[in-house]
Length: 185
Image (cartoon, rainbow, N blue to C red; front, side, top):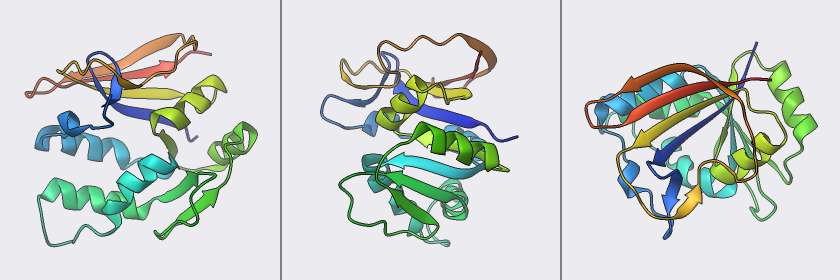
């Protein structure tokens, strides 16, 4: 049975990007990147908002024979998955295995997850907020970085109450901590 999973890379104070929209502080080292790759191997479909899709589509063009092994591996994982981009402003999608939806419709997303044979992830804090508010998210992965950025886009939306069960945790040599929670229904 597939799950809808929200994975976020965050600052200690809970932001996915800082007030200027930068996430340079979140670049993973090789150990964290390899761990993320292993999480992503279970994903069959990525759900993205426009901004995250614009950021992630670079993985379509990462050369197979250039760069670190973990980056090449992630590129293969990303290209093998389907993508759904939710945007009312994007004219078209430019990567294979990608479709454009004009609005985020919770019943359609629930049906997509229920029909999936591999996990579905919701990416981008704004789109994830809609999924969290609709009660669609089954699990959360948070990669907590040892930095305080003082403002920006929050990882979790205000006003949403979730009861969670800690499933796993891991500390990395660089100071990043991974937290994995199930949403209790």
